[in-house]
Image (cartoon, rainbow, N blue to C red; front, side, top):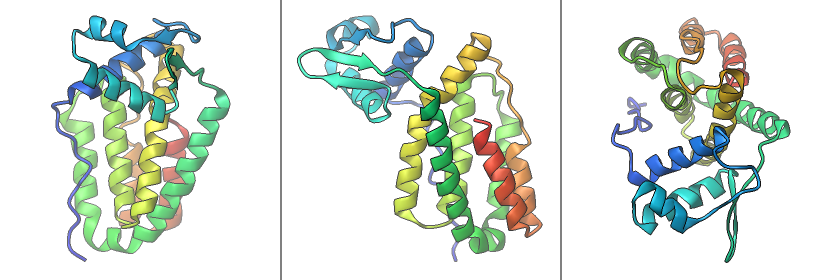
Length: 217
């Protein structure tokens, strides 16, 4: 099979709506808004000094991720994050990613080990990962790249949606742990262990390390 390009690499230039999305999410995580507070499009346009379109796009995405609930003619309510939500999203990721790795295993060990290791080396060496959003982005890039070798488009779509829903939960945990979204603990070898076991043709151990990595988030 031909070499699979990494389709999950992101441009460093965020869309304006993505930037606003992350800033609203950070406001919620830092309790800049109360859990039962209603967010208003007009007020957010004033805060960010932008037009309605990027604010609307950001709010719609936050609704899709289970962070906000749209109430017609009222605004957007912040949905309280529960421990049950974290457990459910982790279980779903484990199911999807382990299945994807099993499906893509033969192609990975034949064709894709070098590019996976380059991704791991780039994450651990070329960047200073001291920000929760940067760590999350790079972590998701690795997991989506690993799952992409299954060539199961429906599985990948569900995985992307699940990861999007986990973003707020992950950052909220980090904030509650240390009251900052900077210089958080990050294990630089968690992905390397997975790739190393794939290099050793040990699928069972690679699956074990994959599950451990997902569960730690």
